[in-house]
Amino acid sequence: MNLTEQLKKKIARVKLKETGTFASIYAGDLVYDILRVDPRVVDGVDFVRKGDLSNILKFGKQEIADRAEKSSESLAGLHSTYTGYTFERVVALDFQKRGAEVEFPTSANQSGHDLVINNEKFQVKTQGDGIEIIEKHFEKYPNIKVISNSDAYEKFIEKYPDKANLIINSGFSHDQTQNLVKESTDAAVEVFEDNNLFGTAIPEILGIVSIISIGKNFMNWAGGKTDMETALKNVAIDSVGKFAGAGVGAKLGSFILPPFGTIVGGTLGFVFGGNLANEYKIENYCKSEMEDLDKAIDDYLKKGEKILTDNQKVFENKVKYLNKSLKEKKGERAREFYK
Image 1 (cartoon, rainbow, N blue to C red):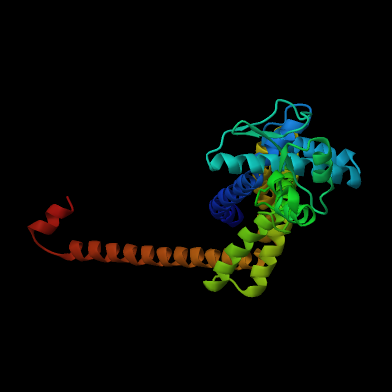
Image 2: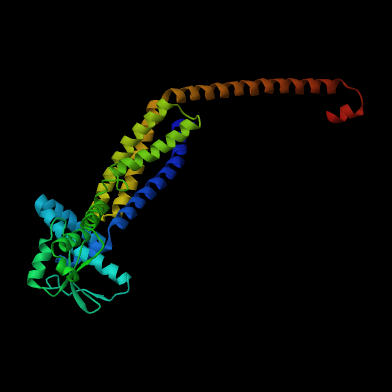
């Protein structure tokens, strides 16, 4: 009997469950990242940028390219532009929820107004510090009202109380929209790069592998199936082997069809890395136990063979005794038996 192969078959059944768990968590993290991308940000960016950026995947690819090509100052300026156009979408949706009819201009270069609400033109402005952009608007278009972020609205009213009828408080702060843009751009990049697990600082693939291994070994330890030292060794070996395999597989999959190919490649790599980790554990940590088990099975078989041999001899002696007894008997039935 090849105990190593039998042990590997048993491990394979456990591994199938782990693989399903890995794929489920990996896919769940992808869905989580997609849901973090606010459609108002995507719409705003698609409106202001050249080219089609109307879905999350295109938006994410463009953001990755921008981060690779632009300086930090240039990228900050670009995101500031995103904040302005996203704010327009935030305001528009809020008015639509309240039953207003809202129209967007056909071009991002439309001068004088950003929205038409119930047939009235409005400029939409958001600014974190100061009110300069609102002041410049009124210098050029004194009769077109402004819908602004709450912080700028308060500063403008304080400085120009006589113009209170020309400005409307949106109820949204500048930081809210700025954070919306940051969260969405980071999430769109994360859809492809898989750096963080569910938006935390934990590395995604290593985090998933560690969660599965820690959970499995904790349950084994709590159930008395292993000791703490062995459990910790298993976690370490699993984390290294499965993380390496899943990481390489995910990178290969990302070249073919990201982000879904990344999940497939990562899962296959997880299986391959798990095979290596399990073989290592069997060969290095189960060697003495397997030798003891081999010896115990051999002893059992030898003792079983001896018992069978002894029983066979006893049986043969009984047959001989029976034959001898029958031959010595007198009478018709004994003679008929030996005809």
